[in-house]
Length: 131
Image (cartoon, rainbow, N blue to C red):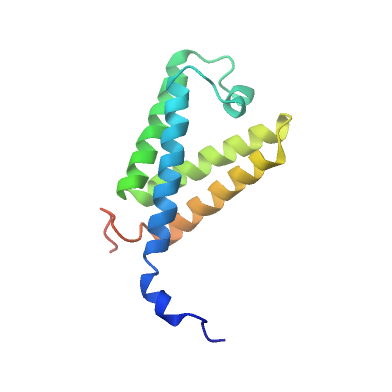
């Protein structure tokens, strides 16, 4: 089947760029929330209930680093794997806790985007160079 708008295929590298930047800003926000001593309900239900502030800040640091790496396009595949694992843990946490279906769909969407970025690469305007 022919594409409806074949001219737009020349801009295909913008798609991973847009997804990468949006997920990067989401994870920056997640990291800053962890640094404000406001534990998100999903992390609180799984493993951060009994943990000290050190582990919360460590997780927040990883979220901020992954978000920054995704925004600038550095180590995109490794960062997106971290995003996938973090989203999977959060999804599992919402399964065991009473959570809205929108939260679960949100984490599924983050997992799908991160897997897509793992396979497709960073896209345009990135510091990662394809081999």
